[in-house]
Image 1 (cartoon, helix red, strand yellow):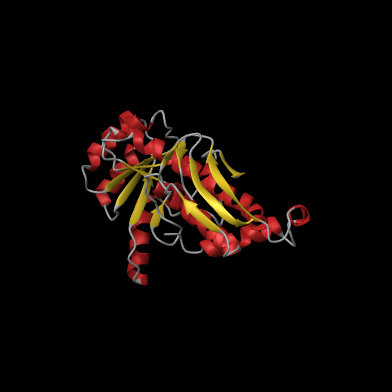
Image 2: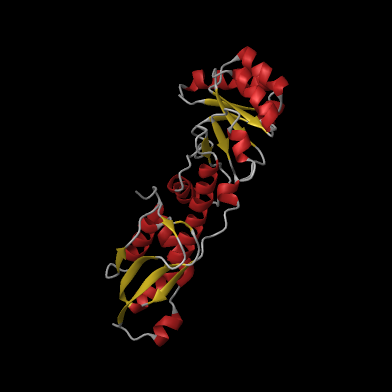
Length: 280
């Protein structure tokens, strides 16, 4: 199911690309000409955005018909054909770039996510995304993370109390920040989980002594120190590791017993998957 707001994004993307008219297509393609094009996979990875592609095509021109051969989350290889798009040739050409831009971006995110998920397979650790997303595209990018087998962290600033280093530094310390957060929830009647970031075992000890949180983020810990931290927490809170964790190092972090690993690179550094729309 497409994320909420996808139709508005489609409209804005089409308006951005087409503007007052695709003059090249209008000049070279006869009105009423019909044809088809296929989505050709040119790189191995995880396909994402099939449902979105159909929505783009139909929203621009209900006469376009997309015949799918693959689904979101499918592993693909060079030479695979994901779908055929049939209908007015002018419409096919006008939606081509918007459709590809979305699918290449989302498939890249899903592909990188799957690599991280596969790297921690069997450990019980869950791979999370972050808020390091493209402005206005967060819902779609987090959707791609789910397609790739990862899970979503908070969507925005409003659905979790997440006390990071700047918060507790400005609040007068980590304990003061937690107490203020709990008082705020009591005062407002909001039911939100509290997560707190710690930068070392000394700050973790403060959280363990005072409690009041549901999750602790262990930021920039080495796997060795992270293992000690997870043992100290001993399941009293959920544990999350973050900070510079790569595809090469993620397994070592997951094997410490940490519950979650958040990876900003899933959305801010994923390379697009090579896809092409070819006339057929």
